Amino acid sequence: MTPVRVAACQMNPVVGDLDANVRRITAAAKDAAEQGAQVAVFGEMALTGYPVEDLLLRHSFAVDSRLAVHRLAESLDAAGCGDLIVIVGYLDRDSDVPRRTEGTYDPRPSARNSAGVLHGGALVARYDKHFLPNYGVFDEDRWFVPGERLVTLDVDGVRLGITICEDVWWPDGPVAGLGALGVDAVLCLNASPFQIGKPAERRQVVADRVAEGGAPIVYVNLVGGQDELVFDGDSFTLGSDGVMGRAPQFAEFTYLTDVAPLGRERTAAVAGWDVQTYPLPARSTVGDALQVTDHTELDEEAQVWAALVTGTRDYVHKVGGRTVALGLSGGIDSALVAAVAADALGPENVYCVSMPSKYSSEHSKDDAADLAERVGLHYRAEPIEDMVHVFVDQLQLTGLAEENIQARCRGMTLMAISNAEGHLVLATGNKSELAVGYSTIYGDAVGAFAPIRDVEKSRVWALARWRNKVASERGETPPIPENSITKEPSAELRPDQKDSDSLPDYEILDDILRRYVELDQGVAEISQAGYEPDLIRRVARLVDRAEYKRRQYPLGPKVTPKAFGRDRRMPVTNRWHDQT
Image (cartoon, rainbow, N blue to C red):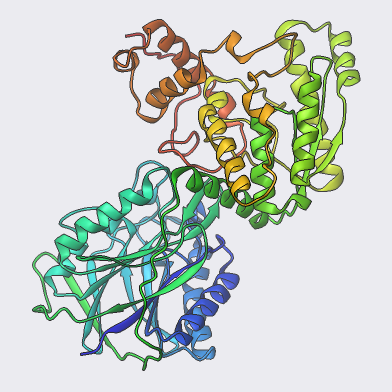
């Protein structure tokens, strides 16, 4: 028996854009067929985009998704690749389940996270996801009901099993069942978001399932940004002897894998599982023997940078925007955001505004202008001193109120420019600032998107140095002025102000924050790392008190294991504080 040629199609869908996603999938499938593929696999819910969140609660959206999968089958046939076996993720529902009451719809008894098998212009089989993650950024137990059966495809003597994402993360699950059925490979559809360390974790999990099921796994992931989630692609095929194919990270891509019969004993049933097997003919293949496609994993800073760029680009474009505006202070945070925006959207689409007050230093103004010139950004100065005086004099503001009115004048300026010229405003705060509440509501917290809201301050500096190093290696001008990287950070809202006046060194602060926010450690646990309990309590109290600010902060791409927002849900009104 000859191998079956499988295409792993890594694509960037748009949530809810069903017709456009049909066109994207059809184009990618046609390209795969022309390369000689007999089976093409797309990511989890690639047809609807992922996550659809509470769109799923709308009965009409579930109906449209079901109709779209049939349109896709017809589109594939019309494009001349109806004989290609296409496996694609979509939202399905069990049509025989009634509405809960008149005028309302309960998705729980009927909504399915499904993989449709398309062939000959029709939907010929469906697999429903078994394990529904309900942790971190996932709410699938709220949205779906789990599948109950295993699905295999017998394609000209090669047996293929189907799973979806979380199904491969658990031992003794569908992969073990498919192994008992004697499959030659498992096709796994995924919508696995990026976070630091996730690519290596995925490969280890899949390696464990390959050993458990006794067959290679073709792991196909989505790519692209969706609100605060970024999908990094990094699709791969892994067998017992190692990688059999791998796509690049953060880019749409298709690679081919040959799946050969393993010669193992096959069965039609396995204890504890309902099994459905579908025999399908394989289209004749073309082309020479395959060379293994194996793209190297990016280093950690490159992955984070690519996630920030991808998240920013896709957010702006997918909401219908083209240009962005941001305040450029000369400090490291706004410098990094400007560089990310330039890489994401092109420097011609980035509009930077310097908004000096009477406390702004000359070197900060010079550094802002220097960065704009280095990168080729639009740049203008809009001093805020006169605006600030109006508020300060009329309201007799001093101290913190005077400091905050400067930030709010800057926020109003940016939003006025946005309204007048149509730019989306980017907020420039980092995760460390958000954690301890060092942001001003209706000031520096204004905006549509916050590219570095999940990047702690110490990594902000590391990313700036990394991006400059990459530019130097390419023979380009480093985008970020060295002075923006090396000078002591300051909000410049009062004379001689420094962040260190009220915060510990950022390396110390970020480690405490990582333990408190990402690892959920308490005062006693963190103190074991050598930090003074009083310092830990002060930092923890700042974090707890700033929850209301974070609820009002713009979205930004998740890159750490636990980002603020849907990844960490804390009560705003809360009187409990860890004092141990």
